[in-house]
Length: 289
Image (tube, rainbow, N blue to C red; front, side, top):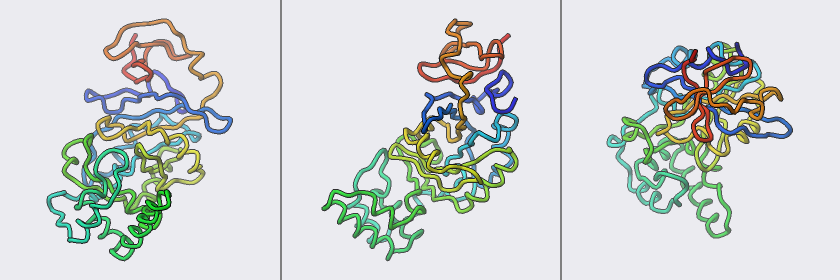
């Protein structure tokens, strides 16, 4: 049944792909939202996302939901992943990379190869202007001007980090080029709202979105990075407005049966199965009868 977590909605395959994991609910304004992250397969270059992503959501989401796709998934499918050892940084890229501040996990633009790709994407004059603004930021205590001037195509570049899943721990992934098209077409296929996002431990940004998506709402609900980094294999998510009857306090506390990683419990109105409590999270699994 679209629009609710039900016993048939979130079956995972043998690899765990398709598993929905419930994160803590979040309040935005006067509305509470359920937040699910979805474990996916490893996306490959040239993949048709309209075919491979739809089964994770078809029949499981409603028009009020917002399906969230990590920008790295879209970029890799577009062939925007570049082998690290094939990038030869110019001397300016090496010099600039030495002056980049550490932010969050990984090296980011502190890696000369990633800085080189930023120069190729935005052009050297723009990167130099951004670097100058960044230098003034250090003197004045401001932050963010480097990426504001360099642009989203630079801010969205992902270099390999400590949690990046192989083989992409040897790649630099650029910003997607056709995110808006993917968002619009997926929204039409799924009859829901879709957002393509760049989320990390520093913050969240919406790169593309279908009609009716409230971008500020999406940023707010993803600010704590519920999708995690690469090792979690959860680059997909669903943001769902929570009806009063669906609130967690209404869920039964009785333990129905043990399952590795948590407890299988009842879903209101659905009987047994469908969800596994794992610490403070809930992961869907096959229905148990």
